[in-house]
Length: 507
Ligand code: MSP
Image (cartoon, rainbow, N blue to C red; front, top):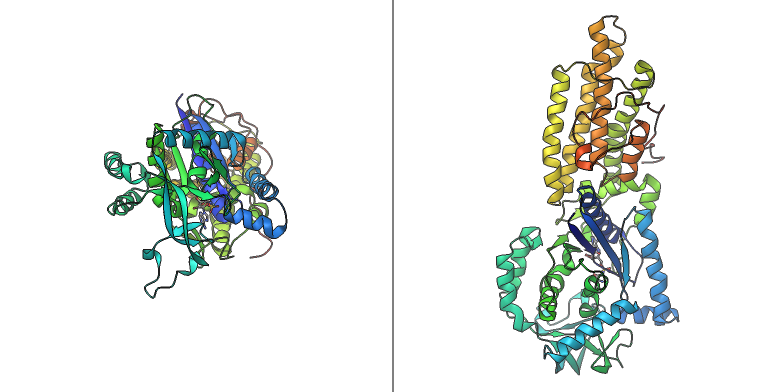
């Protein structure tokens, strides 16, 4: 069994979870479930990023200590996970002792080796982005871009990490590991970014300006700052769990790829003498009428409301079917309803109902064995073989939207098979050959439905379980074995009916 360690970004606790956060958890969960079904020993980590200026400010505004503020928001992020059927194995908070201990140990080690030095910083500071700015960040007319909010000029002593010393190494590494970043075109963007010389990374803030952080072990007048703290969560969570580091994949949004994950993180690991992760999956943004959904713009959607209204599996299906991992997707309730009513209620929901209905009407509620294999059966089976052969590699390559597209084409084909076989007509015929065809049709539609629902398991785990339940099936063998045509349901007693996707009350 190979070990597969996967992480999400850790979320800032300066606002409630929204669709972007939910998507990343669902995507990572689908990958984690898929790998588990493929036989890997999976460890799935998520968590919250709790230090920094914004949290300090928000807590002050509310008149409560930052820890209490972070506790309250973290509770919301944690509560979201079971409601989205997320199967994380651990949840790390950057305010936990286990994390702070590792961050301080690594900082000390790097400081002792001369990788961290005290320097003077003259520059501009954006409180909103918690970021130092340079002249080149200004608008052509000399003003600061809106996203930075209020910008102030400052001079202060701070600690710097020798990022620039590793630039050439990183370029070589990325050239030698072409699949380090998914999608591949983003790796090219990183190499493009690395064509310009990079500066050393300022990793501290004086405590008089920022109290809410991890104090530097070698100079307690400073706290470490943003990325040096946050990125290390991936390692601190498993530092005491042998065999887990390095991570297989870090799943993040494209906004935090360059430079944090694609430049700072590999270099921090390299400098600390730790192995590098297998790779980084950078997904795109959910937008609303073209604009990124974010806390600061306010166009956010509460993912839990949708999951509660339409069921968590429908929500997961929509996210995975709609988003081509890496690209952006626009969210609208209308589009959600198109998928819900079309793919789920009409295609899958109807298929389940017809299968149960006919097995009850023509088979007394017990599934028969297939007896003949004529063209309609051969065609459907051949389509399954093709779908199956494509489905697994597409999932391995994070192409879930295409994998689901193929799978739902198969679901449609099962419905078409039923139309072609028309059991309601065969049922009227007294001929033995037609009766054999009828039994075959009942067996075939049930078998095809079993296969489709089994393949759906990583994305729609509850739905898969319900369908197996009404088919009277107790899955046996590995997932791969279950995906083979002809494992047979004959003799299974089916349920009377199952409403999977009730019609929404309003459009
Ligand atoms: N705390 C940092 C990450 C540190 S990781 C060591 C952070 N937090 S965040 O709360 O702003 O974002 C968390 C994740 O959600 C990021 O990967 C980000 O890309 C993702 N999303 C936030 N808004 C998003 C959308 N509108 N759409 C999709 N995902 C986006 O960044």
